[in-house]
Image (tube, rainbow, N blue to C red; front, side, top):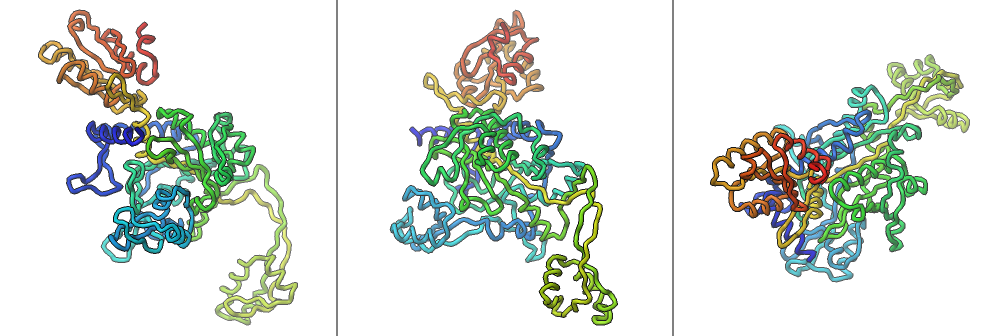
Length: 578
């Protein structure tokens, strides 16, 4: 039955136009899927719902930007992706097929080996005599494989670029400019929705694991020392309950626990309330997709499982029929890692200046240089040497002087009598610091599949896709009762033209009315409007509810208003027209 549900959804998706494998006429390529007409509409609606939860409801401090898909090599050197964005790969020595080593071991032995080194994975393969799952041939040593897609920027060889594997780096690189636009105020959320590419080794899970897909992501920048203002809407979600399993619980074979977000923060399970806040928003968003809270869980990643930039990560998981718990979003505390790296590699200052309410008088040590002595000793290099001395740490210099050690700059010995450490008082009006960052990141194509699976119902031998009404790719179907009756067709067309100004609408006059209802149910249309002979007499039509199959009669002039309440306010038809 588990396999059957996945197959039913996949076949329905291909037949009705939600999604299908790309490049089918050439045999297809693993990890690439097309979205058909219904899939494209559903994706748009999911993205808009994400935008509502993460951007529009936080407009006072969250903005959305758009950055390029291709980035220069130095960006991914700075981010650490060139070095660390890898997966373990193993090759069959007989047929040449390549597999992701940790997934192969997990499938064969049923153990979690995520985060183990290539050497450890090789040892497990050899000790358990694992062979190629296709031809049974022997397997090679495990190596690492970088998942970045390479490209060339412009006509010059060596001008290497990469397709972004995440949206984050575009937002980090644009942080300084975006902060200026937002008048240098923190907290600041920078959101982005767009395509990314990951050169997966062997994607085999349909829409769950793709090589090209869409991410909806936000980098939320805040002052880690400003507890009061770092997360202004925290109180709105602090009492929301989540199901969470910690790294320690996983290692001990324990079970998930249910507790409020604030309890998780107070107990140190979630390291910061800003991370907890966006996890709460994420749960509300996924519930709005039609997923019950009982099928949602947050799993803490252990240190060996986390990405290189993260000091804490929770995956938001949804339970599906074939694969069990699958990740639909990741929530990472990235600290100041990314900004510090880009500051180092670019040479640009990315610190934020925060003014104090009142200027402070602080004492600090200062290096005084005897310029006359340095000038006599180093002639034309004197100014360069003086500049380098003044950039040294006064505490370190003072330690050298107290220990009677020589101070060496550019292999040149600096006389101790040429340097003096003094203490001065200064008025300080503010501080500079690198903001910390939490990141919620969603894979949209996974959400499309999850929505379809949780919408799939069967009733009296018929399929009903009970997609939440406001998410449905097509909101209303319009049917003339009899396609051969010209007056009914003309009236139905007239109503269709009115409704399409307000909704995504489908017109269908082919086959019996029963067959048309069945087709509408199968693609998830919440409301079907039927024009019949009574319509010609009194300008009323019937509206049929996809899920209950109940029908009500509505005056044509009230039709748009009734449908809006039914679709967007989720009210029962009988309550609206009572």
